[in-house]
Length: 369
Image 1 (cartoon, rainbow, N blue to C red):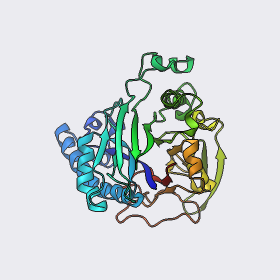
Image 2 (cartoon, one colour):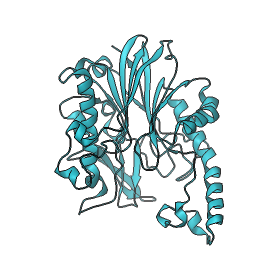
Image 3 (cartoon, rainbow, N blue to C red):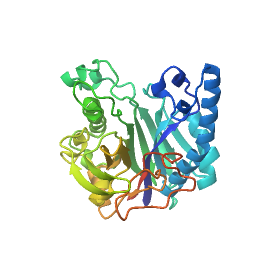
């Protein structure tokens, strides 16, 4: 019996418009900056037209990436609300994959922009095993005090009664063909702006580290400390951190070279330092684990993994010979691929946009113990 499990940050699957760019140019789209817009009413009309025109191509590509992943259970990040998810599934996914994802789960979380994590599930796996939900739990209201995770680093930017998860940790208790399987879907704190001499990744790492500790505590409280290794569970989502990266050195026209390096520290060390779970993407070659291309000009560009399937030790061991897949056909043309990894992009993909997402879906076929 096999299960196809995937995670994908679809980026801003929204049902609303953001007009704050008229007064805050940092939030204004770059194409509108090319024009002089004197009236807020005209700005709103232009922004509506821009978003609607761009969204159709984008969501067709998002749906194509999901169709290529062909998952039985799909963990999503950056979903506006259930209405947005239902509209996307009916208007786009249905055209790509047919009558597939009948089960949909989303709980409103803590993100100030209103974007949440969600799960889409088929009623059965591809080989006919029933997928049943026994219970779904949100941990969005859990505070640092609740789990005794507050420390001096967090005190610089947080209070003890603040919520730990900046979005949520959505926990699903499932039966797959009668076999128990638990799923934890997250979207950790994004890397912010530099602060106190630290770059955006370092300055926000204490928050992500606390989120990782909280996920681990939730799982240990569920199964019992020291007993998690024999359970069947996965942690999926956009972790907004990485333990290694590939520096892309060079510029267009002159060529590139690719240098792999390990990070001295990561919030994700909480998961991996003692084998609590396995990042199965690390089974792939070192230059072929990335799920996102980051660039702020030729002096700062790299490839890294932000999107994860972490498997419990027993589940990982039961699938020791398997490799996860990374779907990269929805990447924009500005993404620089190491030699031999180039893929055929989806029709109408642009230099920067439209695109399926800056993130790549990660999917793996699993045998459940």
